[in-house]
Image (cartoon, rainbow, N blue to C red; front, side, top):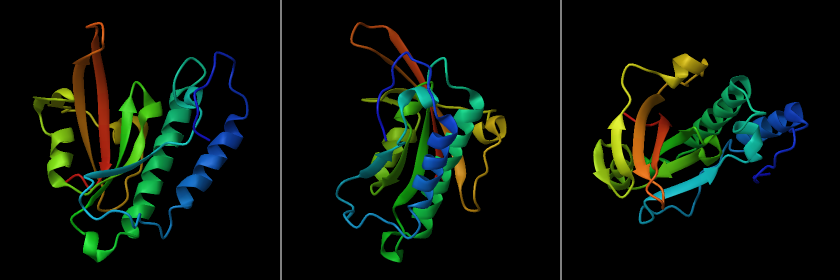
Length: 175
């Protein structure tokens, strides 16, 4: 279940990770039939309590397992993609440091995909490519055949003008 956590120590982490693996396997044979190309984008956020992937009770090992489940869910959707939707990009996004924002996503518009991933200044802030690093190598993630990674940095400001810097790693059909 997706929800915000509190300051208490998170319990039942192995059970929560098992549930996430079941969730990722539930996408076998699934492709959203509501996509006709006019939406630009379809997504489903990672279904966890926020403290599982963020905060003082989370750790790299937990985040790696959650990221791998996102990749596995994305690959299941990719394998189920109809030939009529071959121009759609099936990816997942691992957002850092706020991994609770991570998601499985399908871009039905190439223009919208490029707006998210092309170095520029746009409504998403300043976007630049991450070069010389790989989240898959850093975290030991396994990408299936035909999947690649693309890392970007987004720089923006909050409502009070404080700088916000995020990493977004797109994994899947990014080439």
